[in-house]
Amino acid sequence: MKMKTFFLTVSIVICLAMLIFIPLPWLKILYSMFYSPIPGRTNFLVLGLDRNIQGTRRTDVIIFASIDTSSRKVILSNIPRDLIYNDHKINSIFQNEGLDKLSQIIKELTGQNIEKYIILDYSVIKLVGDTIGPIEVYVNEPMKYTDYSQNLFINFEPGYHKLNGSELLAFIRYRKDANGDIARIERQKYVINKLIETAFKKDIFTLSHLYKSVFKQIETNLKTGELVYFAAQFRKGLSILSINFPIKYDKKGNIYAGNLKNFKKEISIEKQLIKTKKYNFYVLNNTSNQSRTYNVNLYYMWKAANFPPENVYNLKNLKIASDTVFLLNNNLNPEEIKNIAQVVHPKRKFLVKHAEESLENYYRIIDALSSERTYLRFPIDFIVVLSQ
Image (tube, rainbow, N blue to C red; front, side, top):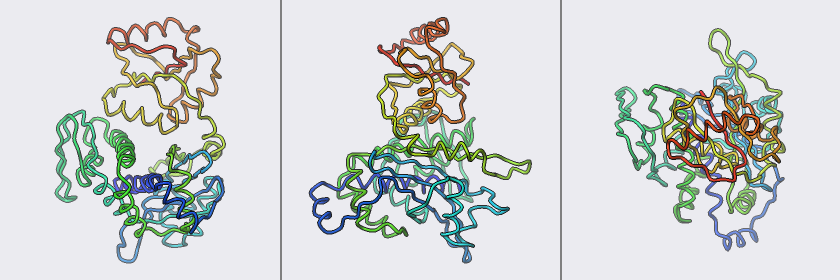
């Protein structure tokens, strides 16, 4: 099920990215035929349905998406399919009570009105992967696993690999390493970014064909003119920010909504997407997972929040007790930098210190980097250290 969830999420992101590639001359022609401006901010409910099994179609993916055309920014938040709402799993609402009821529930959970919807089958993403592949990925350790019941055969050696649809599926489904599902989630995020990168490099004919094929397989209340408007607004690119839905577990392992008050504040586009300042900073990985794959994922997590670091380096031979941001630019607002770090890493608790107030630790970090022949390029606004 997690594999299907991943592929549905990718298909949504790719569909948004493909709108960028309609050339300007064609946009002008389309403008003369269809043109339906929509508000600067539009909220979507995106549903990914499982296969029809004996008349039942489960909602395998539920995503709240908020799109701001004026700033070309997108917020995505997955609502867990097994979330308990009024004593029922939320993935049963669409089947039993319909789209309007589910939209009302999502409004209660997010505090946002739902204006548009997109409904698709998870098989759509296989078409996307096969069309724009192969996708180059990096495997940092041997990945070997066989499951005949699922027709799953994984056999990758360390190094770079160019993978098509079925191979990509095997890559993101693997969870037999030390970090299990956590590592699999990181690989999924890594592949999402690689798919988007690859889509941006494809020619207009490939993407047009893919878009037409995908659009035939989805259900939506978006009008043609509104799609043209989105294409015009996003042709220069877009930024995507993912926000975790807050959850908590009971003793039986059932999932319930967590702190919705803070979540509703966090998901506000006005709060998340206004700040687009450019900072010169580095992310230092002081965790136990210092693989290249994880570092690449860290880079794209920051980039997705519209704050790409200069680089991500491993911090070896030194242990920092807490997740810490060292400020080297005294003109920065510590609270603002802390908020940025929390958006990228919502589960981490960051300490923000001016480097001059913690010179001993700062010099130890620079010395540890130098011993590994890693040299930071100054001037630097701040350094983010991710600890255990």
